[in-house]
Length: 260
Image (cartoon, rainbow, N blue to C red):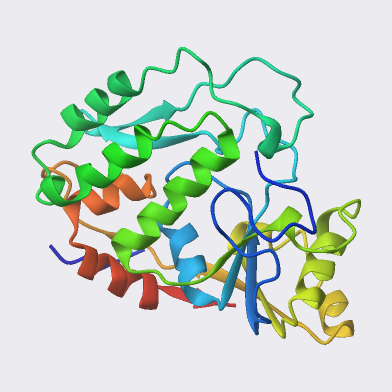
C-alpha cells in the first residue's frame, strides 16, 4: 500500500561502544544530531536518511515528560501512548545512565501492539521487527533505544552510519548550539541538518561563521489507510511499517520532505 502525499556506553576515547559504533567515524559532509527516541515517527528516519552521518546523543539529560521512552500507536481508531518503564532515579541523569524497570513486562507491551495491528496489511513483515525490539534483554535505556533505531534502519534499508555523541573527542561540557557546532567541526561537516522543531534553537549566522550551512528538515504531510478509519497522523514508525511495505516507506524517506 503506497503512502499518499498530503501532509551504558563507554567514555570518550574508547575504540567502540556496546552497540558496535566506531569512536572516530569518517569525516562527513552532512551531519544530523538527535536524542534517541523509542520507535520515533517517520520524520526522524527521514532525517537519518538525508545525511552522511547521524549522531545520537547519549550524554544528554533524560527528559522526563518527553518522548525518549514513549510513543503513540493506533488503538481502536485513536492514538494511544505506549511507554518503556524506567527504574526510579534522578531526573538529572544522562540518558546513558538510566535503566529500564526490572518489572518491565515486555510480553504485555507486545500483546498490546499485536492486538492493535494484527489485521494490518504488513503485520507479518513488521511485527517480528517489533518483537525483536521490545523483547531485547538490555537493561540500559540508551542501549535499548540504540538497538531499536538500528533494527528499524535495517528493516527500512537505511545505511547511514550512526555515531554516539560521547565517543567523539569534543568538550562535552558544552551545551546546545555550541556543542552541536563542536561536534560538526570535529566531523568535518559542511552541512548540519536539524529537525524542523529546532528552528528557534539555532542561528544560521553562527553556523556560517564556522563554515557550516544550516538546514531544517520539514516532513511533508502524508497519509495512508488505517483500517478505513479517519487518519491519525504522525504516530510511531511502527504504525507506518504496519500499513506500508518497506519499499514504500523507503520512497517516503527519500522524497516526502523539504530542506529549508
